[in-house]
Image (cartoon, rainbow, N blue to C red; front, top):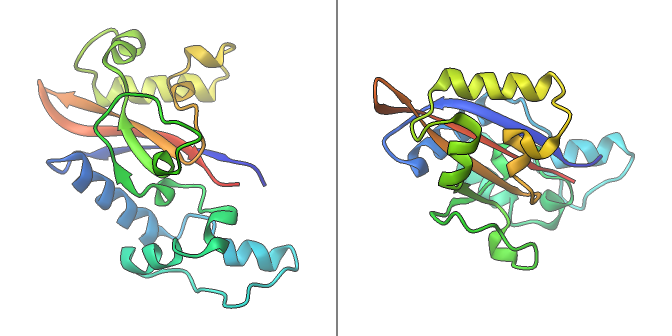
Length: 173
C-alpha cells in the first residue's frame, strides 16, 4: 500500500505526552484508520489470530506487540508510541527511533512560520499549501518529517500562550 502522511491540529493538553494520548484516543474512537488484519483480509491473506479493532489504547498497544501490526500499521498517529524531546533527526538504523514524535527544530519553526510562536491559523495555512501542491517538497512543512513511522510537532500559540499542537508525520507500509 505504501506509507501515508497524516496531520492533526489539536488542543494542547498541558504536555506533549498528554496531547498525544488525547489525539490517539480521538482517532481510535473515530475508527478512521487502517486496521492491519482487515487489510490482510482484503488481499485474501489470513492471520493466525486476527485481532479486532481496539476499543482502548491498551488494546492498541497489545496489537503493536505483534508482527502483523507492523506489516501495515494504521497510517495514523496511532503508529506513534512515545514523545522524545530531542530535535535530532531519527536514525533509520535505530529501531528505538521508530514510533517517535519529536519537536520540529527551532530554526525550522522560524523558517516555516517566520516566528517563534506560530498560531493554529498559520499551521492550517501551511497545511493548505501542501494540499495545494507546493512544487518543492523541501519547502513544505510536512516535508520536514523524513523518516517513516515517525512524526514531528509544533507548539502553537493563541494570545501568547500554548493552545494547540500541530502534529504531522507518516507511517504505514
